[in-house]
Length: 300
Length: 300
Image (cartoon, rainbow over all chains, first blue to last red; front, side, top):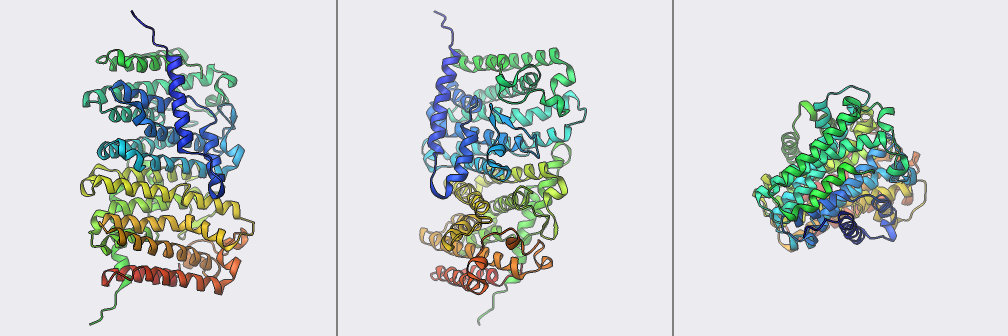
């Protein structure tokens, strides 16, 4: 019997797991930490697909590990993603008023607290990653490797570096290769790190980790291309943020450089490559395959 | 023969060590990382006493360890300190144009790149702390503890939390206890973490770590009180930053709450307590004692 994998239920279940864990790791506070934790939690719980943490958990399970062990790492990835959104939305950066259908952090708390909430979320990720309770369930060696690869993917060699290129490229013409380098860093690096850290946490073989890392690379790029396409084709209601922003800000995107239909083709190719990377896996990689198709077909 | 400890030479030597290591860990880059690394290096090498890294190295030596082993951790502390200065100086925060006698990051690179340079420095600290080369010379267990305690001291439970309290207290009257809590977090936490991580790196006993941690607590508070005093008594040329800022911004400081002379007395008391914490150490703690007196008597 060939069961069809129910991705919707799968994502809902994993998302609920992540939300619950996030709430436990960063509970509401009273007293001196109330203001900052409140601002951190606002952006953390305003919504979101929880794609990075889910990819981490799924990668762990794909190589035969237990996703429970990966939960703190998965949540740390979401803390880092959330910090990056808060800082990207700042007036000095993309100056966005809406995110996930709600006012952005600086609109609610002011710029100073928004900057600090981002700083605190980034730092909290490393606090969580090195928590003694986590060290009980993961060997120290792999744990240090994971913290290192996440720091690499988040800093100037990854996400921050991509954001700097994005700033520099705004208003300029860049070529496809430069755009790919930028997207690989801005969005791809943390998505890739999510899959890779999950594979390490699940005690995957070197070959398995390499295959999942390649999968992560391609879905990361596909994700960013689709993001650019949705900025043109999506609506504010669907996306929960302003649309047609890239064109207004004169940002170089795949659609602006190669046109919509070629950009869509390129995204499809990356999804195909991602699926190909999973060729040595059997049914256990069904969730990752389904997530790849979901990224291609997503409307928000 | 009772030799007098030559602190000036000691600090110069340690500072040179730290500067050299920082240059090695964050070398100039060409190509895609040039812009961001350039901005990170600008603030990192614009000057500075390198107090936190020196405290880390000195604490390592005080408990009998080799300071060479502690260098990457020491440098990570300076990366975090530098990020905090860049973000604190932003227009949305303290809006300072001068730092260490030079224009602040956002004045040179603009706000967006200044925010990102701060983000990148913070992330780079954790990249450096978990570098495989570091893991060779320090056991994984203590290393994870150190990363955890530095993250705790830097995030909302420490430095960022203190900055949030500082923002909330600006323009308001707060009492001495609230001010102490704020300073303990804003400045004290990272200074304390510097000494503590050094003691762990030097393989100090539990008692030694506890004693040095207490020392760090008191010099951290003394450091902030002296900072507040220098804002009133110092000159822009001596300090390399604008003075009389606290009063203009209606910030609550020790001098504003209790007057200059009582504030000076309090700083002296903290220095005494710091020295007392070292009672079980002999000559090997001479550098830490000298640093305590230096903090009290500093003019910048």
